[in-house]
Amino acid sequence: MTRRHLPPLTALRAFEAAARHLNFERAGDEIAVTASAIGQQVRTLEAWLQRPLFVRLPSKGVALTVAGERYAAAISQLLDQLNEATIQALRPDASNVLTVATLPSFAASWLIPRLGGFKARHPELDVRISVSHGLTDFAREDVDVGIRSGRGVYPGLRSDLLMEENFFPVCSAALLHDPERPLREPADLRHHTLIQEIQEGLPDFVSWSRWLELIGVEGVDGGRGPQFSHTFLALQAAASGQGVALATNVLIGDYLDAGRLVRPFPHQVPGPYQYYVVCPEASASRAAIAAFRGWLLEEAAAHAARATG
Image: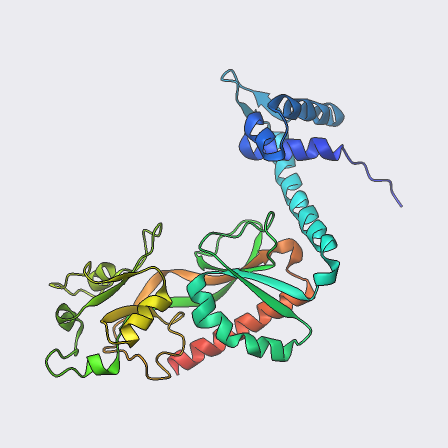
């Protein structure tokens, strides 16, 4: 067996952090050492490789050399793989537990009602659900799989399209058949309360105002109405007859099938984001993760077929 030709791991870690930040002080803050310690480790690695990795700038900053850029890209990927391997080694007794991170509304409306099917197929695996609005940092969080609403570009991650999203109005059947305020076309929304969902930090989110603009309806104030922080709260308000909400084919749950909500008209608009199932490339082939990802994609395909059938 050929002996490995490896540089000092401490120097590699310091170099990779400095390459990401292009700043020795911030790199030191990340790994809890001083900026001078980062500089010393970088010099040690440069001496070991016998080539410069950084150019020291007059402004006291640094820039990567061509060799440094290539080396940093490769080292970053390898350290991610080492991190994943270490996480797995630290939890050998929990190899049958999958931690899935996703959005609260997606978990409540789509994922949790279907988990019984996954458990029936894979009784040896347990799923732990973690909800948040932020993106998962797989390198620092104990998460195996993420389900995200976005554009599908996640460097270093395996990303599979789960579902595309469309937005449409929904209301209770009683509200639909109100003889004094009929809901026959989108312009009739001017006579009804519009239930709003609060989505901070998403400039392309399809609000009522945006939805009305996209289908060409004028004369309706899309900004009025009560506000809710989650989709499932807005849908509950609509089901109880408090107004008309904007729903999506992904997050509508069983409201339509159960008759708790109805679509007053067929108009819908595509959302700017789609749902993706993601995981680190280094762990994508793990049997448990591959099984869960495959099951998710099957469920999403069946859901789409029922919606269009």
